[in-house]
Image 1 (cartoon, one colour):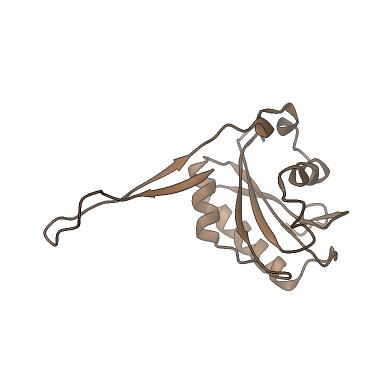
Image 2 (cartoon, helix red, strand yellow):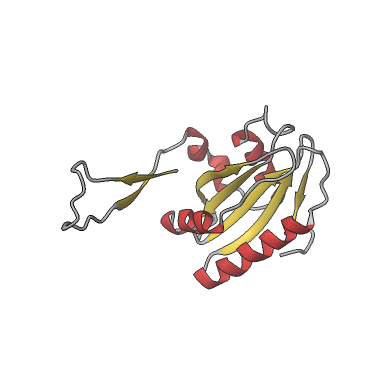
Length: 164
């Protein structure tokens, strides 16, 4: 999923008002066409799928944050890498997250990030961003199904631990 801003090709004039069009591009992915994408109904399967799409070289080096978007039937309709960070932090722009989810017509979402340190314990910041996204989703009618933390070998599910 890629968002592109299109700008007019003519120079701007002070007497003319231009409106820019925002368009969402969609590319069918072999990964999403796989029947396994229709069975992402538990944290283990979601973590396995995340390991397929994650840049494995970066998993133990730097944090990244992903969004998975689901239809009302819990079929995966798209995924998007929202951001990359440093060794122990990643910025999450909730406006970008929800605009992407809305453009995909998501009924629910799963968010995920990794901990290069190998620790599975969610930080206070992890818990705060999860709450912000869950609360924002309620306002928009988009359910936060889970927040997965990946390490090289294991995963942590906020849903499985009762934190959603």
